[in-house]
Image (cartoon, rainbow, N blue to C red):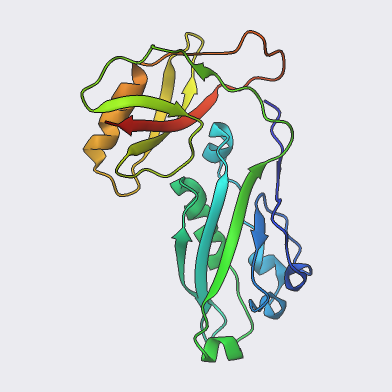
Length: 218
């Protein structure tokens, strides 16, 4: 797939002066003092991780941060994850590189600033392989696989990303436990390995070998 990546978040006026050369969208409230950066280069948007590009995963990472008296970012933290740890970690690494002018009023006040990175593939979406109905083996723990469901793992299911080989079998499966027991995530991976996928024969457009979704608990 000839992948192109672009930022789609609406960047407000205070961010317009920053020369964003990264691969995600970034937005922030009017109170965030990006006009007081030491340099635009210190706060370039994070590059998409290569693994995230390979798996073609998207999402929104919302985080918050403070600014120290020396102008460096303090206590960056994800307040709402994208569902994909690799994207959230890239967002945290990106904001941590920003350097503001020292002794800002916002730093003295201990103000907390929200920020959102939007990870979105551009262009028409390629066809992903679809789950073959009835192909997953019965399980006492899991009830089904819900394809293309990007919601984070929780008490009702485990989020997985994977590739599909020429035989329609899921390979290179990666679980996103998000606090769920690792053993449960491993069981979800084993369950997905029993499933099979195939392309819609009526679709004649571009195809991709990537997939994602949630293994649902009973």
